[in-house]
Length: 397
Ligand SMILES: *Cc1c(COP(=O)(O)O)cnc(C)c1O
Image 1 (spheres, rainbow, N blue to C red):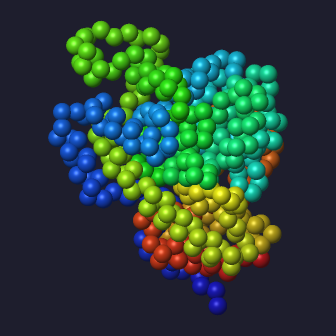
Image 2 (image 1 turned 90 degrees about the vertical axis):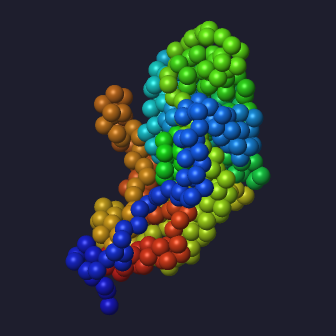
Image 3 (image 1 turned 120 degrees about the vertical axis):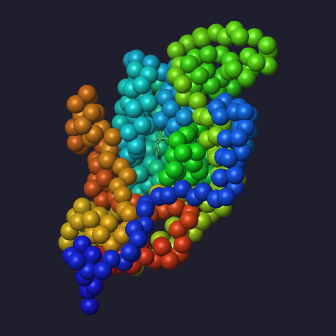
C-alpha cells in the first residue's frame, strides 16, 4: 500500500511544517537582552568585550572580534590580511556566496576550487590545482559543520606562504581532536544569524591568534579609527585618528548580551545536533535512494546542516520533484548550495561556465538539506524519516 503523497492531494505527514533551521531562545536570553536594554549601553559597551572574551575561550584563541555579520567578518578578514587588486583567493565552489564575495569587496579575485566528493570539503589537491603566482590566501569552508582537514591544508599553505581563512559559519562548536574550530586557521569567521549555531539576530565573529590581525579587524569595523569611544572617554580625550578606510561593522551591546547568553548553551546544542544526525543516519540506512555525506574520524562535527545526496539510479524523478514532495509533506528541506560561480552575477562578470568544478556541480543536482536544529524532538526527526520513506515508496526505482 502506498500512501497518497500530499503533493497529490493526500494528507501530509506534518500538519505544521518543520523548518530546516531555527533559533532557540529561552528566558535567560530574554533577561540578558532586557538587562542590556535598560543599561547605559546599547552599542559598544561592556557586553561587546565580555562576549568577545567568552567567544575567544570557546574558540581556544587569544582574540575574538565581534562584527555585524558573518559577511562583515569575512570582509574584515580579507582587509586585515592586506588583500587587494591583483590578488587571487582560492574559494571552494560549494559555499554560500559571501565566502567569495568578500574577496571581491577588497578588489581581489575569487578563484573557485572543487571539493571532495564524499565530504564536499576543500582539499589540498583541489586548492593546488587552482594555485597561481597571484594566489594570496585560501578560504576553507567547513561545509555543513564538518571541519576541513586543517592539518593537511596548513602544511600545504605554509609551504606556499598562504594564510588560511576558515569560513566556519557552519562549524561553531566543532573541533579537530581537542582543537576547537576557531583555532585551526590564520583567522576564522563565524556567522551569528538565527539559523547558525548561536545567534545575535544578525552578527559575526573573527577569531585569531594574531594580535595584529585582530587589531586590524577591530579598526576596520569602526571606520578605520584606531580607538573606540570608551577608550577615548577613559583617557579623557576627544581626539582620534582615522588611519585607514573602514566601515561601521559594529555589533551592538544588546546583540552581544544575547550572544553571550546563547554561547553558554552551545555544547548542549552541538550534542543535540549530533544526536539528531545519528537518528537520521540510522533511518537513512534503510533508504537506497538517499545517502548522508561522509564524516572523517577524530573530529567533532558542528552539524549546522544535515545534507543528503539523492541517488538518481534509485529514483524515478529528479531533485525538484523530491524537494516539492517533501515540502508538501510539511518538511522544510532546502538546497545548500548552488556552486557560487553559477550565479548570474559571477557568470556575467567572470564568464564562468558550467564544468569548472564538476564535483560541486554534480552535488548541487543531488543535495537536499533536511531540517536540523537543536529544538527538534525525536518525533520531529521521525516525521522527516517517515516523509522520506513515503516519498521513496512513491518515487523509488
Ligand atoms: C551564513 C554564512 C555566511 C554569511 O553569514 P551572515 O551572517 O549571513 O552574513 C558566510 N558563509 C557561510 C558558509 C555561511 O553559511
